[in-house]
Every structure is written in structure tokens, then in C-alpha cells.
Length: 404
Image (cartoon, rainbow, N blue to C red; front, top):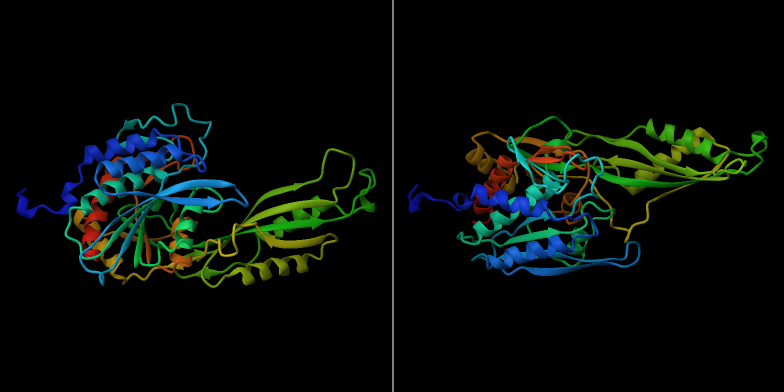
């Protein structure tokens, strides 16, 4: 290929990209323990002359977390052109004990790279990093921002939450998040794929209060554990909303905690219930739905329904949908076809993540496009190496079209 016909995407070197991914996978980085990988990402970007900066993340009240995101910006030539944010998280879930090999091996076999977080989402992180470097040499009108964030896998998505609170998203016009999409899509799809929305999520935190009595005479008490179990079953069967693109909502009881080892009727019990929601189901609707279930059951216990405590009232994962006709979507469609030779599938994510904050809280057009794999959050997790390279090239082509 002549120099005249080379494009920025052609600068993505497959071997170098996968070597970078191996380096990332070999760094232990469960959420709240990301210092080493944050430093690695910062140093890699700095070595490429990309002027990264640390962005402090602080949540002192619930978690006591103190850490850093890594941010970098490519400035375009036209202040009126759109600014695109490329986002990936650096953390993983806690290491799973069931691995029968080193969970940080980065072993490659049959086009699959293995390791905790290889698919979710260090493959997407590697793609963002090499794509951003290639874009630094492109002639762009608009700005491109890279954000490598902490605590996506944790309870509150503190890294991206901090970005929004500090106004970093205020001048952005659209977002690409390189999470693995097809594996958690609402319908069965394969890459190339663009996920244009996601359901939201609430966690009910419910207290059931009965009346204690001697365990040999249960009829003299009101068993909070029994009532909590009945409530959990009723909530699991409750009517939920539906959306033409996001599908149906869902309810899943996660835990019941109550009672003890003494011979007493349990007087209190705590119930935690997951509720995935679609557009139109806000906090008031979700709360009212649960209260109706309680009223219909007519339990002997008193029931107090609330939501899991959060760092601030707006720290919620809301549902969102990005328009299929948005210029970013069209750019990604063309780039996917150019890189893979296939028309990308359109899908919608079944759960929540940083993309929920961008799409719902920040109200930014947000698209998920990332390399797929299997066994995310579990032993044997892997990512398809060819898809990591494809995603990097798609990012470059799409960004050049959208911001160029």
C-alpha cells in the first residue's frame, strides 16, 4: 500500500495491539485496587507523547475510595466541530478462584487471549489506547478525549461518576464505550455489532419487621424471614415495563438476611432485590410497583421499601437509547463495514455500566462497540484477539469520519 492511500486505521499494528493487551491482562486490577494499571496506562500514553493526566476520584463517605482516572485529549482544528469521548475501564471483578491456570496469564490459544478481565474489558481498553495514538497523527477538526476510568465493576461506577461531576463530559458531543457488547445483548447477535442503548437498574433495599417469639411457639410471633421470602417470590413475579428496543424489565431477588441461631422467631429481615428497568420506569414508578406488591400480599410484618444507599441521589443507572440515525452511529456502521466487510448488527445491552451514566445522566449519544469473548466475570474468561484489532481500526475510521 502506498503512503498516499494509507489511512489512520492502517497504523494499527495487530501484534503490537495484542502485546499491549497481554501487558494489561497481566496486571492485577480488581476494582478499588487499580493503582498499578492506572500508572501503566498513564506511562504508556506519556511514552507516546500523548500528554495524559491523572484525574482524581474521591468518594469518602460510603467506600472511602481515593484513586485516579487517566485522561488525554487530542485537540482538533475547529472549535465548532464535534468532540468525541472514547471510554474504557481499567478494573476487573475480584479474581475468581475457579481458574485452573494463572488468571493473569494472558495466554493465547486459537485466537483467544485468556485472563481475568481480558474481555471485560481490557480488550476494549487496549483498542482505545492504540486507536487514540493513531488518531493523534490524523488531521481532525474535532477533539477526541480518552478516558480510562476506575471502579466500573464496583458498586457505584465512581470513575465515570467523577467525570460527570467535574464537568469533563460537558463539552463532549458523543461517546463510544468499548465494552464487550454481544455477550450481554438483549438478543443473540455477533460482532461486528453496535449496541445503541441499555436498560437501567435499581436495587430495592427492603426491611421486613415482624414480632419475636419462642421458636417452639411460632404462632405467637410474626416471622420476618417467612414474610420476606413470600415478598421475594411476589416481587420476582411482578409486572414490569417493556420497551420496543430495550425489551422487558426484570426482577431478581439477590439476598435475604435475617434471623439467627437462637430458638426465636426472627423479628427482622433485610431483602435486596435487583430491578432492571426500561425507559418510562423511574424511581417513583419502581417504588410504587413494589408498594403495590406489598399491599396485595397483606403481610403480618411491617415492610419498609427503599433503595440501596448511594454516594448521591443522582448516582443511578438509568435506561437510554441512541438514535440509529445519529451521525456517530452512521460513522460506526461505515467503519465496521470497511474494516470487517460486514454490516454491523444493531443491539441493546441487557444490563448497566458506565455507558448508562453517559447515555442517561449526561444525556450523550452513546454507542457500545467492543471485542467479544466468553466467561466474563468467571474462570476461563477470554477475548477474541482479532476482534480487539478490528475494534481499534473501527474506532479510528469512525472517529475520523465523525470528528474529521
